[in-house]
Length: 213
Picture 1 (cartoon, rainbow, N blue to C red):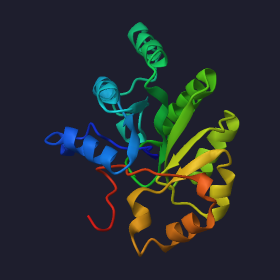
Picture 2: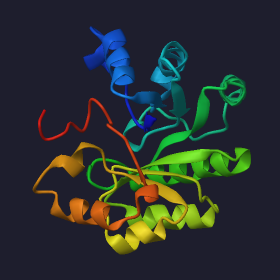
Picture 3: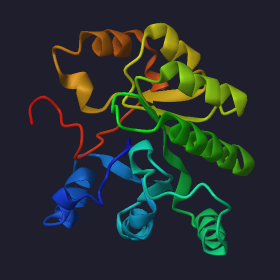
């Protein structure tokens, strides 16, 4: 059984043939798809898709690039109710994708750090796995995981060193379509040098396409 641990089925690129995409995945042996909700505006859509898709699962969080509309003041009662609804949902499996992105120069570091740490606290409190967005931020991400004692989750689209990969102990690593590019020699060497049980399958569709697309 294959599990796509990261697929944005709610993306507009799939609107025209969503049912066909899901059924093709099943025929190819992908028995489960995890759909991330990355901002409040798509939480409800992702929840619906997770329930409509065969053995679909979902995670939800504030992505580093979607913090412009997020409020860091005291959470509302409505937000608290949404969290309770997620915890009661058997298709909800974790917090994600969260993290730090230093590849995009316009993202505010302090704001990213605040939401990253707050969401790690949620994961720790409720015993949930995390899906981490790691972009030029491996060391700072690791610091947050250590501080909040998080040992279960996925480092998504990983592109660090072998030493950094080892430091994500207890976490699985995903490489997405980057692994298929011949020029991505560091990632390919890293994936080849890791034990198979340390790696998860993830397409990140439609964002990180394989080389043949």
